Image (tube, rainbow, N blue to C red; front, side, top):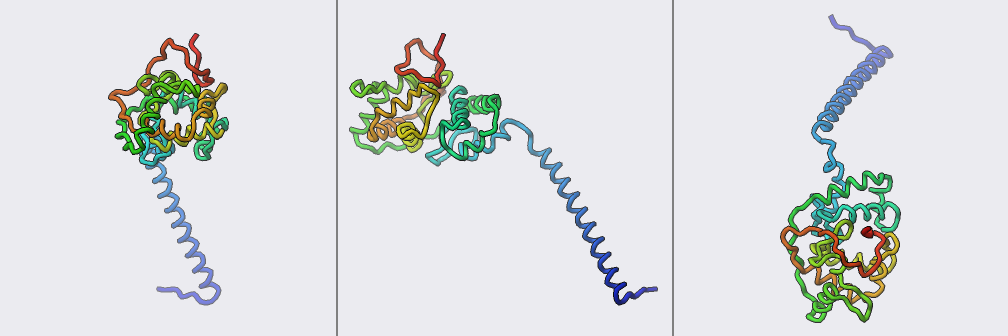
Length: 252
């Protein structure tokens, strides 16, 4: 036996049927979403590596850098240096909106955890960049790195960054394996006041003594050097730094 509804009764029946179908559909969708969330939660472990995916999106897997010349390699840098830079971004001494957004509300302890993670990463270095400046520019860059320029009161880069330019513990970075564009931009940022460190800001003082040609020569020479096998930051020596640096602890 069939029942045929007409008029308002039929309309109400159709509405009830539609409402019921929508509730069933909504329930099915909610259940599927909850199930997917459970799967995703199980599939994505809560590890420091996973949490730092936002960092490696720009700095490359393990912090090895990418082929974009403005994002530096952070893998293997001294933990003290990395922590200082994260702290500088958070406190406004360095200016880059994406970095500031990422670290603005992070605690010192979490910044130290991030720094320690990347300091412990040691992926292979990329090949050095081709060197195309003139012979005079090459010679100037090599001289500034290894000997400095006493006439302009510019100490050698190796006096702070180590004789192999691979960094000095606990907080001085190596400069090999970095892109020329990044080196130029950062020294330039110190020179024009866009980048700062804890006072006394030794790099800011030094950058004022470098001409634009000097900056280009140093950056080009460094970027063209191969990185030694097993490169790592070395223990500090007994020699006094040529400039006082607020970001580098003074030995007792």
